Image (cartoon, rainbow, N blue to C red; front, side):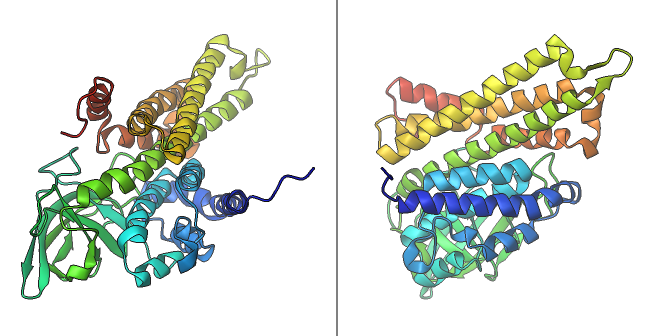
Length: 384
């Protein structure tokens, strides 16, 4: 007996097939240059837009694909296997899209769904660091508009996105923060310098300052003072799932290259490959276990989100920390088994090694997450 059709499952499968095509044809071939030049992956985003994939989680009513957390996580993992920088940019676009879908204008939502608009989050500030929910930048009602002032420390797609989901202190209400949709071309916004990083070199993660930036009250995303609830209820599930998926895709790529290298590289005088060494096989076995553990935790976290389980927030905290820390371990093992070859940029493994480090210091950092997780398991307020 044929099973009844599941439209969402079919849409997910079709979308992931499109991602495979874009990754193979556009993203992977450009990954080395994106890393070497620190160049923003514009061609990748043009291709994703043409295929309707920038609107993956946009609702069908605005022309999007109407998918959600699972699709976003699986998609960015695929992209990360080709280029981690591109995956991180896409992750931040989907996080911003989730907020815009819930609170933004129909015009911007349609533009995203049509592949004509890239957005990103603008939360991080030096003054509050890993406490991303507590910006120190301000918003004030002046002359019939809202004036924004603040300094964001590391914003993915800085100077490249079409808009920023910007956090500030509330304009008038109580609460930790308020969110705004700020056009990238707003007068008073300044991108401070070009990003030059160890890894994720193509994600244009630069500081942005807002000096007397004027937006309309209608550009507010949600209620004044409601930013914390939006961050926790909308942003954190997408962000933590997708950053974990980015780490997972990067791990898979590094491990795949390591396996290919040790299987093909031979000791001619012995008639053996490097893979014939028990120590090398043991390292690869350890790496495979670690990758599979993260994948299992990610799948369980997706289930928790979709089922609304009581342990959802705990799982979201765990999966980001676990994926970040495991990513550094697996890529280190990949470097080790590839030996001197891994130090050549042309080999590709060292890029994954460098890219993996970003997840451990991306707010909330892995060390901060351990504290949050400890609070959660002790029954204490996590974000107090």
